[in-house]
Length: 402
Image (cartoon, rainbow, N blue to C red; front, side, top):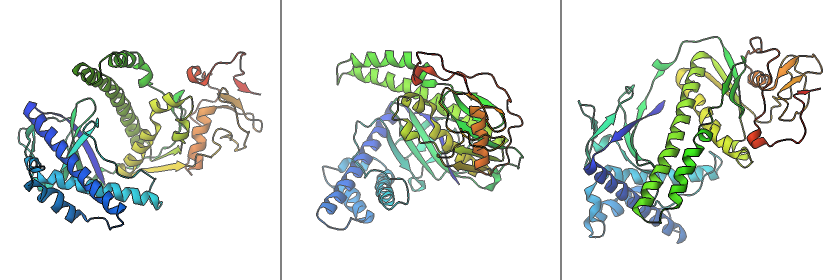
């Protein structure tokens, strides 16, 4: 399978200028190609082919005074921008045909976009020097912060500048069956939530780090400072970068937490099952901030690709499975329960069940995994429901269902 390995870059002043030129040229070629295809569509003509666009917008455009500066960057990155446009159209039409989730039509790029990128393929003759620097055509040798070793020779490298002004090199590498882990016995069901980020079918509860909540004070201060700066000024741009860096710090911490937890679960279990949550629907409720802070979709995606990478089984059950209503001991459906009910007693067998652990066990059973609640708590302590967003009640609420 193909994987991406990302490393931090530290270009010098001249290299940053060269990369800025590359970002601008790629953006112009992309927009010119999009404009040509949209004009052909409005006139009822067939879409211009990529080869014709390459000849017209790159080869011939370099000979004109208006586009002569396209020759200052590598021709490979300009060709890749046309391929990116092809991929955008292909994804758009596949979404219309139901082959993949729907997405919007390609849009024009702006120089004010907070994320800029260029991609170098093997034809660009980029390389990694013996000193560990990344040698890019028309840019030079860029310093790289290597945090790990690449498992194989990369095929392409994408240089990305994010909204915080940081530069990254993203390598695409091929991995083979040598990364498959030896088989293990445990199989696991996972119930994702807000009170606890994840509750496992063996009774383990993983607390929610709430990275965004903990950083709110710092984010508010940076955002207030930004709002007081005059639009278009250098001070406002510096304040904008401070806000972007504060958000990037939160996103990096969340991503690191997701990677560590997903890797541990995949390594320790032969099969993992999760529930297909309606994240988009939950993000439109009053719990939206906490839902985005948890980042369930990113975590589930990590579980899925790491399971494929290491030879594990990953199962996603339907979102309409009554995992919180069925007793994991006897299988009797006991009906829906309010969110404040964290512990309940089954009316059929009398088992005292923790709501979250019971749901995790049912997730595993619905996925066909051989999971039992033998290691889970039989009569766990009470877990208070999060009141910050769920609201408060004027009268005390019962903690168990009668």
